[in-house]
Structure formats: structure tokens, C-alpha cells
Length: 83
Image 1 (spheres, helix red, strand yellow):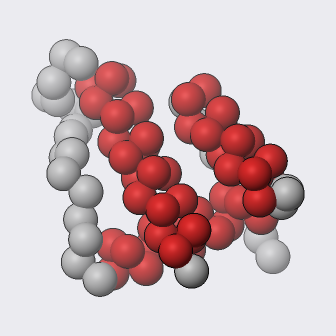
Image 2 (image 1 turned 135 degrees about the horizontal axis):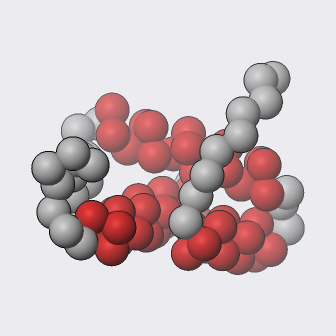
């Protein structure tokens, strides 16, 4: 296993913690599951709607990013629950 440090918005952290509690799993295991499910989803061609850029991007980039991350986590969590 590799160890990485990432920064996530508070709303994402709260969502991951909530899913971890519901599934009685560790935070790390939950993140791994969400990333794996999201990666599978994206490889199947289910791209998310939001596209943005930090340079020259929209003024509300932060809000759009949070919306994007919520959408991603919701989709991944939904996929994980279906399995």
C-alpha cells in the first residue's frame, strides 16, 4: 500500500465520514471503495457533468467544485450500495 496525503473540502470529508459510519468501515477503507467505484464508473463512460479549470475558470469555481465532488460521492456511494 502507498500512503498519500490529499486535501478535500469539508463537505467531502463529512460525507466520507458519514458513509464510513453507516458501513462500519474505516475512513481509509471508505475512501478506497469510493475511488474504486468512481473509477469503474468513469471507465464505463459515465462522465460527470461538471468541467472546470482553475486558470480562467468561472468565478464560482469553488462552489462548482464542491457540487462536482458531492455528485461524484453520491454516485459512487449509490453504486457501492447497489453491489
